[in-house]
Amino acid sequence: LDRIINEANRSDAPPLLAVLMLDLDFFKRVNDGRGHLVGSHTIRDVGHIIRDTVGSADLAARYGGEEFLAYLFETREGGLEVAEKIRKEIEAHPFPASTTDPTKTMHITISVGVAAYPEDGTKALDLIQKADQALYRAKLSGRNQTCVFDPKIDRPESFRHNLDSSAIMYGPSDAQ
Image 1 (spheres, rainbow, N blue to C red):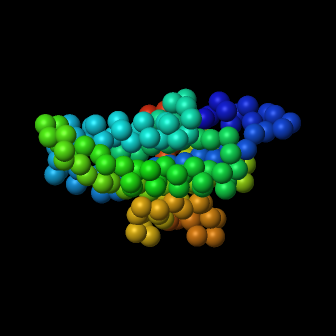
Image 2 (cartoon, rainbow, N blue to C red; image 1 turned 90 degrees about the horizontal axis):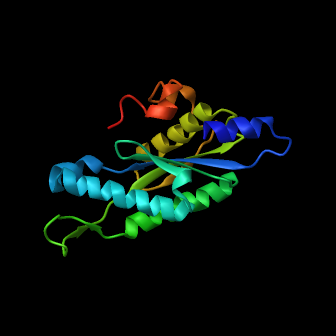
């Protein structure tokens, strides 16, 4: 993402870019209630859904814990459409709830925040922080929804993390 944005900043015709920050809702309940192996399989399966929806494993990654980061060569509206497609697919997907009984399934949900280049920032860290602020608002607003960064609502003082540039490579230090 950092490389793509640096190239875009040098370009006479920079691409549009939407950044998605995604976080599974109440995931601790999966690990505590179903076990960490089921939790691990769930994270893997969610990653596959995200990868398949964005079209490439190169455009999405596990960011930490049960968080994922993806970027798309899309407008803000296009990013919102893809984010909603991911959210709805995860909500409807029957995830395995047992490692021994294939008939047991569970449903989970995901919250998503979207930010756009260049409107919301011209650095990878700025876009990640703004997508994360929008994600935080989605969580506070009831979860299982997508919020697009809005500078009037998503104020810096409402941001819960202080990220440094190493967070881009290694993920936030307090990933849960």
